[in-house]
Image: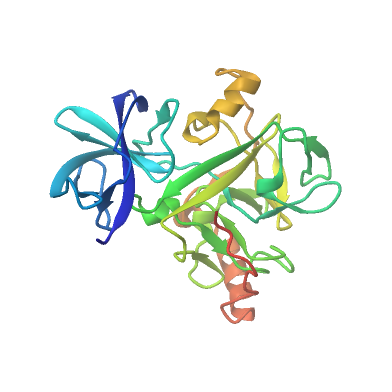
Length: 302
Protein backbone atom coordinates (compact mmCIF):
# COMPACT_ATOMS: atom_id res chain seq x y z
CA UNK A 1 0.00 0.00 0.00
CA UNK A 2 1.64 3.22 -1.16
CA UNK A 3 0.75 6.86 -1.48
CA UNK A 4 -0.81 9.44 0.79
CA UNK A 5 -2.96 8.03 3.62
CA UNK A 6 -5.97 9.89 4.95
CA UNK A 7 -9.26 9.58 6.81
CA UNK A 8 -12.51 10.67 5.20
CA UNK A 9 -15.38 12.71 6.68
CA UNK A 10 -18.70 13.52 5.02
CA UNK A 11 -20.56 16.81 5.05
CA UNK A 12 -21.91 19.65 2.92
CA UNK A 13 -20.05 22.20 0.84
CA UNK A 14 -21.24 25.68 -0.11
CA UNK A 15 -19.63 29.06 -0.83
CA UNK A 16 -16.13 27.78 -0.13
CA UNK A 17 -16.96 26.25 3.28
CA UNK A 18 -17.22 22.56 4.16
CA UNK A 19 -19.54 21.75 7.08
CA UNK A 20 -19.04 18.26 8.58
CA UNK A 21 -22.14 16.25 9.41
CA UNK A 22 -20.49 13.82 11.82
CA UNK A 23 -20.13 10.99 9.34
CA UNK A 24 -16.63 9.56 8.97
CA UNK A 25 -14.73 6.55 7.79
CA UNK A 26 -14.92 3.61 10.23
CA UNK A 27 -12.13 2.99 12.71
CA UNK A 28 -9.22 1.33 10.99
CA UNK A 29 -10.24 2.42 7.50
CA UNK A 30 -7.54 4.14 5.47
CA UNK A 31 -7.97 6.03 2.21
CA UNK A 32 -4.89 6.06 -0.01
CA UNK A 33 -4.17 8.51 -2.83
CA UNK A 34 -1.15 8.20 -5.07
CA UNK A 35 1.20 11.13 -4.58
CA UNK A 36 1.13 13.50 -7.51
CA UNK A 37 -0.08 16.85 -8.77
CA UNK A 38 -3.85 17.27 -8.95
CA UNK A 39 -5.56 20.44 -10.14
CA UNK A 40 -8.87 21.74 -8.84
CA UNK A 41 -11.57 20.01 -10.88
CA UNK A 42 -9.47 16.92 -11.64
CA UNK A 43 -10.39 13.40 -10.57
CA UNK A 44 -8.45 11.72 -7.77
CA UNK A 45 -7.95 7.93 -7.72
CA UNK A 46 -8.59 6.61 -4.20
CA UNK A 47 -8.09 3.14 -2.70
CA UNK A 48 -9.74 2.11 0.58
CA UNK A 49 -8.43 -0.48 3.03
CA UNK A 50 -10.39 -1.70 6.09
CA UNK A 51 -7.88 -3.90 7.91
CA UNK A 52 -8.16 -6.52 5.22
CA UNK A 53 -11.97 -6.41 5.22
CA UNK A 54 -13.93 -4.10 2.93
CA UNK A 55 -11.40 -2.95 0.35
CA UNK A 56 -11.69 -1.28 -3.04
CA UNK A 57 -9.35 0.28 -5.57
CA UNK A 58 -9.55 2.96 -8.24
CA UNK A 59 -12.59 4.83 -6.97
CA UNK A 60 -12.61 8.39 -8.26
CA UNK A 61 -13.43 11.64 -6.46
CA UNK A 62 -13.45 15.13 -7.96
CA UNK A 63 -11.17 17.66 -6.23
CA UNK A 64 -13.01 20.92 -5.46
CA UNK A 65 -10.52 22.59 -3.12
CA UNK A 66 -7.95 22.28 -0.33
CA UNK A 67 -8.88 22.96 3.28
CA UNK A 68 -6.86 23.24 6.51
CA UNK A 69 -4.79 20.04 6.63
CA UNK A 70 -6.71 18.18 3.94
CA UNK A 71 -8.83 18.65 0.85
CA UNK A 72 -12.47 18.59 -0.27
CA UNK A 73 -13.73 16.23 -2.94
CA UNK A 74 -17.08 15.35 -4.50
CA UNK A 75 -18.52 11.97 -5.59
CA UNK A 76 -22.04 11.36 -6.88
CA UNK A 77 -23.18 14.75 -5.57
CA UNK A 78 -21.87 14.16 -2.01
CA UNK A 79 -18.93 16.02 -0.47
CA UNK A 80 -16.07 14.64 1.60
CA UNK A 81 -13.16 16.03 3.60
CA UNK A 82 -10.00 13.95 3.27
CA UNK A 83 -8.11 14.86 6.44
CA UNK A 84 -4.62 14.22 7.72
CA UNK A 85 -5.71 15.03 11.28
CA UNK A 86 -8.77 14.55 13.44
CA UNK A 87 -12.44 14.92 12.51
CA UNK A 88 -13.35 18.59 12.07
CA UNK A 89 -15.91 19.79 14.60
CA UNK A 90 -16.72 23.07 12.87
CA UNK A 91 -16.91 24.49 9.38
CA UNK A 92 -13.70 24.29 7.36
CA UNK A 93 -12.84 27.06 4.88
CA UNK A 94 -11.87 25.77 1.45
CA UNK A 95 -9.36 27.48 -0.81
CA UNK A 96 -10.68 27.48 -4.35
CA UNK A 97 -8.32 30.14 -5.68
CA UNK A 98 -4.54 30.18 -5.99
CA UNK A 99 -3.98 33.17 -3.67
CA UNK A 100 -2.12 32.09 -0.57
CA UNK A 101 -1.79 33.47 2.93
CA UNK A 102 1.54 35.09 3.82
CA UNK A 103 3.17 33.30 6.77
CA UNK A 104 6.37 32.13 8.48
CA UNK A 105 7.57 28.61 9.20
CA UNK A 106 7.81 27.46 12.79
CA UNK A 107 11.15 28.30 14.37
CA UNK A 108 11.41 31.76 12.79
CA UNK A 109 12.76 34.14 15.42
CA UNK A 110 10.67 37.26 16.04
CA UNK A 111 12.13 40.20 17.96
CA UNK A 112 10.52 41.06 21.32
CA UNK A 113 11.56 43.51 24.07
CA UNK A 114 13.07 40.57 25.98
CA UNK A 115 14.83 39.00 23.01
CA UNK A 116 14.02 36.98 19.90
CA UNK A 117 11.58 34.08 20.31
CA UNK A 118 10.27 31.39 17.92
CA UNK A 119 7.09 32.61 16.29
CA UNK A 120 5.03 29.60 17.39
CA UNK A 121 5.60 30.48 21.07
CA UNK A 122 3.88 33.86 20.78
CA UNK A 123 0.37 34.40 22.13
CA UNK A 124 -2.21 37.17 22.25
CA UNK A 125 -0.96 39.97 24.52
CA UNK A 126 2.75 39.23 24.04
CA UNK A 127 4.84 42.21 22.96
CA UNK A 128 6.84 42.19 19.73
CA UNK A 129 9.16 44.85 18.30
CA UNK A 130 8.41 46.67 15.08
CA UNK A 131 11.05 47.94 12.67
CA UNK A 132 10.87 51.34 14.38
CA UNK A 133 11.62 49.84 17.81
CA UNK A 134 8.05 50.18 19.06
CA UNK A 135 6.74 47.39 21.33
CA UNK A 136 3.23 46.34 20.27
CA UNK A 137 0.97 43.56 21.56
CA UNK A 138 0.03 40.53 19.50
CA UNK A 139 -3.71 40.34 18.82
CA UNK A 140 -3.67 36.82 17.40
CA UNK A 141 -1.18 34.14 16.36
CA UNK A 142 -2.67 32.57 13.24
CA UNK A 143 -1.86 28.99 12.33
CA UNK A 144 -2.37 27.23 9.02
CA UNK A 145 -1.61 23.64 8.01
CA UNK A 146 -0.92 23.13 4.33
CA UNK A 147 -0.57 20.00 2.25
CA UNK A 148 1.75 19.69 -0.73
CA UNK A 149 -0.32 16.90 -2.25
CA UNK A 150 -2.80 18.94 -4.30
CA UNK A 151 -0.97 22.25 -4.31
CA UNK A 152 1.07 24.31 -6.72
CA UNK A 153 4.64 24.17 -5.33
CA UNK A 154 5.16 27.82 -6.27
CA UNK A 155 2.23 28.75 -4.02
CA UNK A 156 2.88 26.62 -0.92
CA UNK A 157 6.57 25.74 -0.67
CA UNK A 158 8.54 28.13 1.57
CA UNK A 159 11.02 30.57 0.14
CA UNK A 160 14.39 30.22 1.87
CA UNK A 161 16.38 33.45 2.14
CA UNK A 162 19.91 32.52 3.13
CA UNK A 163 21.64 34.29 6.00
CA UNK A 164 23.20 37.52 4.72
CA UNK A 165 21.38 37.42 1.37
CA UNK A 166 19.66 40.80 1.81
CA UNK A 167 22.42 42.74 3.56
CA UNK A 168 25.28 42.23 5.97
CA UNK A 169 23.83 40.02 8.73
CA UNK A 170 20.32 40.13 7.24
CA UNK A 171 18.73 37.80 7.71
CA UNK A 172 20.69 36.75 10.77
CA UNK A 173 19.82 33.11 10.03
CA UNK A 174 18.17 31.48 7.05
CA UNK A 175 14.64 32.85 6.86
CA UNK A 176 11.78 30.59 5.72
CA UNK A 177 8.48 32.17 4.73
CA UNK A 178 5.63 31.69 2.28
CA UNK A 179 6.00 33.13 -1.24
CA UNK A 180 3.41 35.89 -0.73
CA UNK A 181 4.95 37.20 2.50
CA UNK A 182 6.46 40.65 2.02
CA UNK A 183 9.71 42.00 3.46
CA UNK A 184 10.92 45.58 3.50
CA UNK A 185 13.73 45.73 0.94
CA UNK A 186 15.19 49.10 -0.04
CA UNK A 187 11.99 50.88 0.95
CA UNK A 188 9.64 48.52 -0.91
CA UNK A 189 7.40 45.72 0.32
CA UNK A 190 8.77 42.81 -1.70
CA UNK A 191 7.05 39.44 -1.61
CA UNK A 192 9.48 36.59 -0.99
CA UNK A 193 8.61 34.86 -4.25
CA UNK A 194 9.80 37.92 -6.17
CA UNK A 195 13.27 37.59 -4.61
CA UNK A 196 13.93 34.02 -5.74
CA UNK A 197 17.19 33.91 -7.72
CA UNK A 198 18.16 30.26 -7.40
CA UNK A 199 21.30 30.97 -5.36
CA UNK A 200 20.88 33.10 -2.23
CA UNK A 201 17.06 33.00 -2.32
CA UNK A 202 15.53 29.66 -3.27
CA UNK A 203 12.33 27.66 -3.10
CA UNK A 204 12.73 25.15 -0.28
CA UNK A 205 11.45 21.80 -1.56
CA UNK A 206 12.73 19.66 1.33
CA UNK A 207 9.43 19.80 3.26
CA UNK A 208 7.12 17.08 4.61
CA UNK A 209 3.85 16.35 2.82
CA UNK A 210 2.02 18.61 5.28
CA UNK A 211 3.46 21.37 7.45
CA UNK A 212 2.42 24.44 9.44
CA UNK A 213 2.75 28.15 8.74
CA UNK A 214 2.30 30.88 11.39
CA UNK A 215 1.41 34.55 11.12
CA UNK A 216 1.24 37.43 13.63
CA UNK A 217 -1.60 39.94 13.74
CA UNK A 218 -1.18 43.29 15.52
CA UNK A 219 -3.74 46.09 15.83
CA UNK A 220 -2.66 47.29 12.38
CA UNK A 221 -0.56 46.23 9.41
CA UNK A 222 3.05 46.69 10.54
CA UNK A 223 6.61 45.44 10.16
CA UNK A 224 8.09 43.14 12.78
CA UNK A 225 11.65 41.82 12.81
CA UNK A 226 11.94 38.22 11.61
CA UNK A 227 15.54 36.98 11.85
CA UNK A 228 16.33 40.71 11.94
CA UNK A 229 14.51 41.53 8.67
CA UNK A 230 11.47 43.86 8.66
CA UNK A 231 8.57 41.60 7.64
CA UNK A 232 4.88 42.37 7.37
CA UNK A 233 2.28 41.30 9.91
CA UNK A 234 -1.14 39.99 8.92
CA UNK A 235 -3.39 42.28 6.88
CA UNK A 236 -6.93 41.20 6.14
CA UNK A 237 -6.81 41.23 2.35
CA UNK A 238 -7.35 37.47 2.77
CA UNK A 239 -9.93 35.83 5.01
CA UNK A 240 -9.01 34.78 8.53
CA UNK A 241 -11.21 31.75 7.84
CA UNK A 242 -8.30 30.28 5.88
CA UNK A 243 -6.44 29.63 9.14
CA UNK A 244 -6.88 26.47 11.22
CA UNK A 245 -7.59 28.45 14.40
CA UNK A 246 -10.05 30.96 12.99
CA UNK A 247 -12.54 29.97 15.71
CA UNK A 248 -10.10 31.23 18.37
CA UNK A 249 -10.02 34.63 16.68
CA UNK A 250 -13.80 34.79 16.36
CA UNK A 251 -14.18 33.94 20.06
CA UNK A 252 -11.92 36.87 20.98
CA UNK A 253 -12.98 39.54 18.49
CA UNK A 254 -16.06 38.35 16.61
CA UNK A 255 -16.52 37.44 12.96
CA UNK A 256 -16.48 41.00 11.59
CA UNK A 257 -13.60 42.99 13.09
CA UNK A 258 -12.68 46.48 11.94
CA UNK A 259 -10.51 46.30 8.78
CA UNK A 260 -6.77 46.82 9.05
CA UNK A 261 -5.12 49.72 7.23
CA UNK A 262 -2.38 48.47 4.91
CA UNK A 263 1.14 49.94 5.05
CA UNK A 264 1.45 52.75 2.52
CA UNK A 265 4.42 51.42 0.56
CA UNK A 266 4.70 50.07 -3.00
CA UNK A 267 4.41 46.26 -3.16
CA UNK A 268 6.45 44.06 -5.49
CA UNK A 269 4.61 40.80 -6.22
CA UNK A 270 6.66 39.15 -8.95
CA UNK A 271 10.22 38.81 -10.22
CA UNK A 272 9.48 41.00 -13.24
CA UNK A 273 8.34 43.83 -10.92
CA UNK A 274 11.54 43.75 -8.87
CA UNK A 275 13.59 46.89 -9.64
CA UNK A 276 16.82 46.06 -11.51
CA UNK A 277 18.87 47.91 -8.87
CA UNK A 278 17.63 45.54 -6.13
CA UNK A 279 18.12 42.51 -8.35
CA UNK A 280 21.68 43.57 -9.13
CA UNK A 281 22.52 44.32 -5.48
CA UNK A 282 21.28 40.92 -4.32
CA UNK A 283 23.11 39.19 -7.17
CA UNK A 284 26.34 40.87 -6.06
CA UNK A 285 25.78 39.68 -2.50
CA UNK A 286 24.99 36.15 -3.73
CA UNK A 287 28.23 36.07 -5.72
CA UNK A 288 30.19 37.25 -2.68
CA UNK A 289 28.54 34.48 -0.63
CA UNK A 290 29.63 31.91 -3.21
CA UNK A 291 25.98 31.18 -4.03
CA UNK A 292 25.26 30.00 -0.53
CA UNK A 293 25.07 30.99 3.09
CA UNK A 294 24.85 29.73 6.63
CA UNK A 295 22.79 26.57 6.80
CA UNK A 296 19.78 26.65 9.09
CA UNK A 297 20.49 24.67 12.24
CA UNK A 298 16.91 23.43 12.50
CA UNK A 299 14.15 22.21 10.21
CA UNK A 300 11.43 24.83 10.52
CA UNK A 301 8.39 22.71 9.84
CA UNK A 302 5.79 21.38 12.24
